[in-house]
Image (cartoon, rainbow, N blue to C red; front, side, top):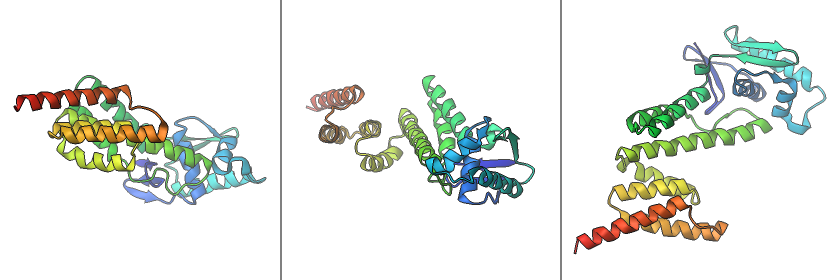
Length: 251
């Protein structure tokens, strides 16, 4: 069975064995064809992906050479068809890691909407297992820069969904350390701090959660001139109230 990976180094494989995709430019062409998902990528599309506005005068012939060599390297199992002045890669959706990732995360979000957090946690963990590092590694060109950011953001959002599903199941212990590291890496990403505050509260560390909120509020004011989101403000008030109730009960 053929498989294609974009959530990490751009790879093609057959029955678990890597196939030689070729040069960084050929990896980019393969990535474009896979991400078009059954739509034709024209020579203009591929030229823009590789060179942007700086395409060479020989762009068309160079592209044809890249595609020809890629066909030879990947063999007859990879169906790259020529349509007019473009190409289409005919491949089963489940053969591409990005498509499997999206299916799993879509399933998980629907499950969370139904309150089925075990199912959501399982699907999200399976999706995250497809992440193998920097997306589209080994490919080059303007196309790669934008898509790499989009795919990394997709994976990052799924990671946070995984923590959210875990917290709904009471798995705060395994989330605090990871979310603390993420909060340090992304000091202004409010959802990370929201999840960290929830995890701390589940572990009985309300005072730390409140301190996290105050620190974030200061950073947002200094860096962006804004207040925390209404969702975070509501969470803060809930924690503050629960902390006061707990303190009152302990007297």
